[in-house]
Image 1 (cartoon, rainbow, N blue to C red):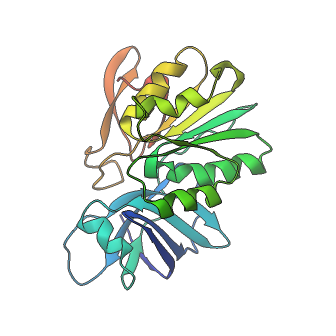
Image 2 (tube, rainbow, N blue to C red):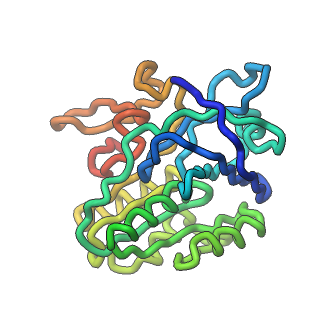
Length: 249
């Protein structure tokens, strides 16, 4: 996959959470798409870029919101690091809902919901947004989320018996929504899939490990139902957003 060197416009840190903005003259991302990103350096350690959801796009500036988990993401967050990124890729959210929708996000995986909310707003689709503030989130991150999503219901999950259900429990009756869009840790996505089964259509943004991001390596394969049988789909090209009912878990 071709990577393009871009100009970094700004970096922000909230503990182990980072927001990176860069100037992007290429194709505008669709909600739910991702880019492959790595620090531009002489060293090839790490060799593979990291898949990161497109968080926002405004006036030629793209942003990525991510958690620093290892050397690759740590380098992306460094102030003096240059940046290599791919074009936006993958299958994003289907926004043809026809009514009030709910956006559900957990932890730093709220990332693709910013772009999604803006897209829905431009289409005249009303949405309710519910975002987790996990126990591990630094204070600066919680304040930033509040400012970045001023209309969202923020749900602190510290001390809750089941954090994966805490945000979903704030939605009330799911029948009032035409669709539910969720992006969060695997436990939250599984809870959303089960809670809404047979009630409201759900789309889930999966965060998978990726190497090639073009479908060649099958390293990001996820189990799906196809013609009543269990099969596999590649999250990088058939996803990363999937209708909940097709996922075989």
